[in-house]
Structures are given as C-alpha cells and as structure tokens.
Image (cartoon, rainbow, N blue to C red; front, top):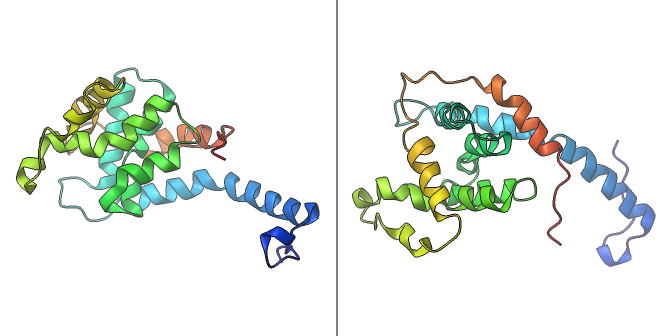
Length: 185
C-alpha cells in the first residue's frame, strides 16, 4: 500500500509528508515514457485518412529523421499530435504542454503552433482563413514552423511511404522524458 500523508490541507503538510509526495511524483515521472508510448499506440485506431494517426506521427518523425533532424526534433515530430488523445480541439497546445519541460523553446513553439500553421492547407474547406498563421510572420520561429508543416507534417498521410516503426523511435521518447525537466514554478 502506498504511504499516505497526514494532512488534509496542503498548508498543514510537514517535510515528512512532502517527502512522501516527492517520492511518489518521482516514481510517476519515471513512468512517463511508457504512458506516452501507450498514448501513441492508442492513435493506431480508425482514421478518416488513408493511414492511422499513429502512422501519421511515425511518418512525420521518419521524414524528420531522413532530413537529418536532431533527436529532440525527431521526438517532437513523433509527438506533435499526441494531444489528439486528450483534446482533439486543441491538440497542439496539449502536445506542447506535455513537451515544454523537456524541449527547446523553438521546438515547443513549433509544436504549440503547428495546428494553426497546418491550417494553411485546409482551413479554406472549413470556412477558416488559410493565412491565419500570418499573424506570427514576424516571430523568430515562424519559418521553422512553416517548414515543419510543409516538409514533414502535411505530407505524412501516404500509405506508400517507408515509415519506421514505433520501436525505432522508442529510445528517443525514453531519452526525452529522462531529461531533467525545466521548472515552471
């Protein structure tokens, strides 16, 4: 049985209580790669595309790897749509929040904004503005996000593309979440 704190209000906690919480949090963090890999596997279900959302993610990461991207960027390409599992309507922001403590500011920004930038290819069919991304045209990572979408994301729905399996990328996911997370307090 898990050890329990004695308090019922956080303000009443002691060092002993919070040591229990910190140990639990550390164990939970150690399981993060497994949870993320499980979420990716869940994306392997039915899809209106010619491939599953998992295959799309794998294809995006494979394209990034084929282009010589660094490991962090490849992992971000793999996980850019992971937010679909929890919140399809704002999947980019969910994926970015998951990755924020572990990735560069640039990769975080790209993942957070890729949904809007991807709209360049389809917003017109949904009554939106395909050029909505232009409000960020002066941002330092604007062109990087345009390139991410153009070269890796929007083209990764091809059932004939030679895609690496999830097992190929698993070490990148594990390495990413083994990093010391940045604190946001």
